[in-house]
Image (cartoon, rainbow, N blue to C red; front, side, top):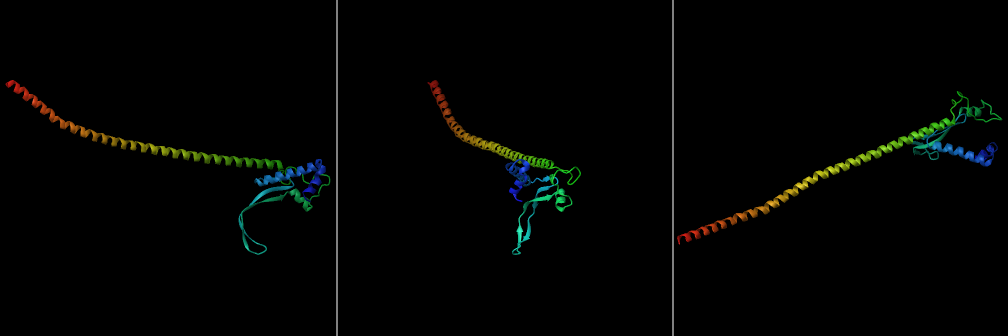
Length: 213
């Protein structure tokens, strides 16, 4: 039975071929998306679909016998439920006017775990994973910001330390230049002092000569 035949088989039960096709597509799409996301889809009495990770390994090429390395991969797996197994093995009879696979009573088969419960649990797991990923991302961003702030503070501190040293050097150079300019001025003043003394002597000599006359 292929997909088209499956649609025809359930068309009368769901109200038409289009409704049956939409129903089959919706069910298959939901199963595939859940398994790809790493969730386990379990239908009591029918079976469960899940994703299985296979580690890297070595295998042999059946045609050449050559040893080949197989990369790590993930594959889908279906495990039939106990009710499905019992019907296939013949230990239980297939009902004629009832659904072959239906929800089992509590305590029988796989413990009465419904598909809805499994889907809810899978959704909770996915939400928890997403929340954990967000927290990790926030922590990384916060750590990066703190590191950037510390580096900026260190640069500013280094710049502040270097600035006073430069100012001190400039001040010392300015003092030296001022000292050099002041020193020649003082020497010139010292040299002019004897001229004043000579003028005083001349004045005194003139006064003495006047008195003698």
